[in-house]
Length: 185
Image 1 (cartoon, rainbow, N blue to C red):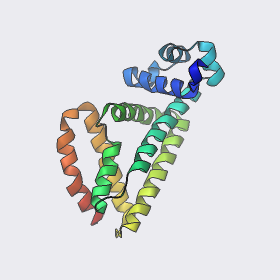
Image 2: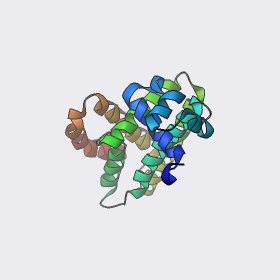
Image 3: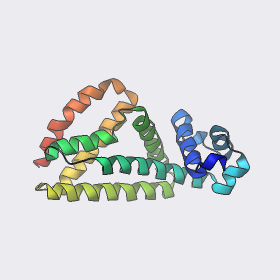
């Protein structure tokens, strides 16, 4: 192992890098090995195939997003907190942009790849459930509907910012009134 580096993390990061640069079709055992600076043999000892590599990359994106969400402190009112939560899902910096590109690539691939769909559905259900519980704690009358709306706004804004990052301030400004409205339904 190169100076105590976790190969799994290096390979998963290389998968994300390749997806960002060329989509899921750019990912192969050879391209990941080349991108990571490791040999094909070392890669195959850790990940036997492309599916295992893609699973590790999905897990990395999820872990990064969860770490950001877990670090959010409840400061201000419920709307402020929810705005900051949604902002953490938006491609507003390089890392979140890369994660959003990868996530959308996984979502497109999920149409044809059931195991990816299962992972994404599971993550969606988990995130939705956590959001519903938070909204319930905030006293929202219909937390399921509000959660669905907040997730739809987050997904829509993230997608728009991928192809037009110039809209970031406009969309961020729109978040507070939209979320405030969603909490009143």
